[in-house]
Image (cartoon, rainbow, N blue to C red):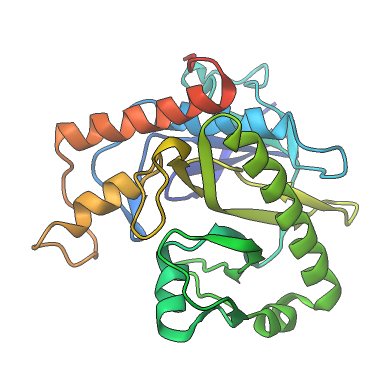
Length: 285
């Protein structure tokens, strides 16, 4: 069989074609504000892949996914891909990021302060930053090939993908989030929000794709320190964003600034710790 063919380099993952399958290889690159930063976070790609693996292997049976294997296929001479690779089915991607919010943070908090709603969804008055919502809400966004994803109201999302598919995506996304939130809470982690991606496989079946429930796609908070009314410490790349927001001489445009060693090490520690807390074991390389 021929060598894998590079199809796409994302902000974090390199995607290859190989024998009718896709290979997703997670690098140690890190992005913030849609800019890839010049310093990698050593081991980050392993943490992302192995945490995704942990969740994929526990998914409820009614949620099919694109995963075939997490092993480097025989015949491929890339030992550096060990623990970083996901061998996947091909799928036609649904052009919508499926975001679920259980708490009021980030752009959701900003929207609520201005409108009393989040993406057109009514919420009770008097909520604070980081408040737990009465129930999780489905707040999808566009899936931009470049630049920023744009938030969608429910009616805009229905117009984009159709009512039947929208309802299915909403049901699946909320169900996975609630299951994972309960699981994580028992391990001292709050999943404040997360995003999922879906696609249709060769048989037309709707399947979960990409990564799931990692520090790159979710907002993780330590439950022991949770206190509404302010921003929360996090186990995700908000640590890097907060550092960058404190810089006076960067306008969020490429090239990204160099990260100091303390920020690289602090980010690495957060990715490794959340893996250990959720899985109950240390990350293996």
